[in-house]
Image 1 (spheres, helix red, strand yellow):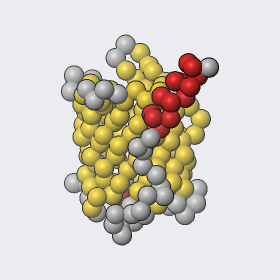
Image 2 (tube, one colour; image 1 turned 135 degrees about the vertical axis):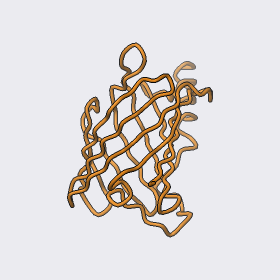
Image 3 (cartoon, one colour; image 1 turned 90 degrees about the horizontal axis):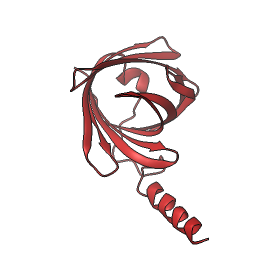
Length: 173
């Protein structure tokens, strides 16, 4: 019983401190993914482990195409070690503020919701890592900082335990 209580306390603490779509907005901007990501977008980001140690940095070039219902994002990653990766997302607008999407490696369907200047995106993916793949779950948060900047903070979990965060700044050139 004591182990169960300790495990419950650790899991409860791990879930604390995350954003919510119910948080009060800090601006009157309205994020519309199909507008922000239409055309060319560039980004820089990094992965930090759960202890805050930066483990990997990367640049991303994104080509976005919106056809009125589906947003396709072709993401080309270049990591500091010189390795590259391409991920192609197909996002479908399912409602006024809701999205669903797929990409190679994503398990099932990703789901998301826009609210004001904020977007929350959740999915599980077999993520390429040096030496293979690792199945992780993303709780991805994006905030529209200006017409041409979007901040992204993604919480990563494996087996329900937070293993790190990805922080990305997207910019429209």
